[in-house]
Length: 295
Image (cartoon, rainbow, N blue to C red; front, side):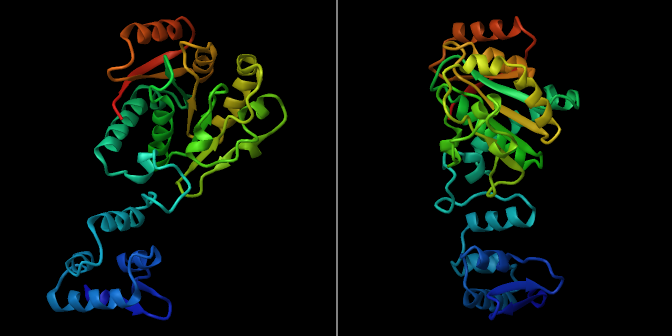
C-alpha cells in the first residue's frame, strides 16, 4: 500500500497516484500531521505492512477520533471539530455524529421519513413543538435539521419562534433580518443564511422581534413563503414558541402540515402533552410523533 503514496513536501500534502485525497493529505490539511510526520508514517507502513491509519496510530501521531474525521471526509460525511467553528457545540449532530445521542437522532429521522416526508413529495415541512419552554424543542429542531442535511437532503431550518428565538445564537448568525422581515415585506430570500461549515444546510433566523407575532404568522404570505421554499429545499424544519403559552405553535403546525412534539423526561406533564396533541389535532395538522428529550 505504501507505493500508492507520494510525499510532496513542497506542497505539504500526501496524495495518491490515482489522484484521490488520501488519509495523510486530509490530516495534513487539517493540521493534524506535518509532512515530516507523514514521512515517518510511510516508513513504518513500508517496514511493517500496516495501513496508513494503523501506522500513524502506532506512532502516537493520531487518535481514533482523527481517523473518524478522515473517514467522514473521504465518504463525504463532514462534521465540525470543537474549537474550530463559530457554530455552538450544543449542536451534537454537527460535532459528534458518531455518538449514541446522534444515533438516536438518526433513528428519529428515519421514522419521520417513513411517517411523513416520504409519504408525499409535497410534504416538505415539519414544525417542532413543545408545551413549555426549556424542554429542548430548539435543540431537537436544530440537531434534527443537521442530521437531515447529513443525509444529503437540502435542508432549511426556520426559527419561527418570534417570541424567544435562539437559532441565530446556536449558529452565530446575524439576526437583524429574518422571518419577521420576510413576512412583513421588508426582506426577501437574502434573509436565508447558508451555513458553509455544514453540508446542504441553511437557516432563516427569526429576525427582529415584532409586536404582532401571531398576526404575522397568520398572514397568507406565510403559506406562500413555505410553498416557494419547498421548491428550493427538500426538508424544512420549523422551530416554534411554547404551545402552552402562545397560539403561534398551532398556526405554525397548520402551515407546515405536520408537527413533532418534544417533551422533557421527568419535567413535562402528560396532561400538557395531551393538551398540545388535542389542540393540534383539531386543526389540519398531522402529529407524526412525540420525542422524549433526555439530552
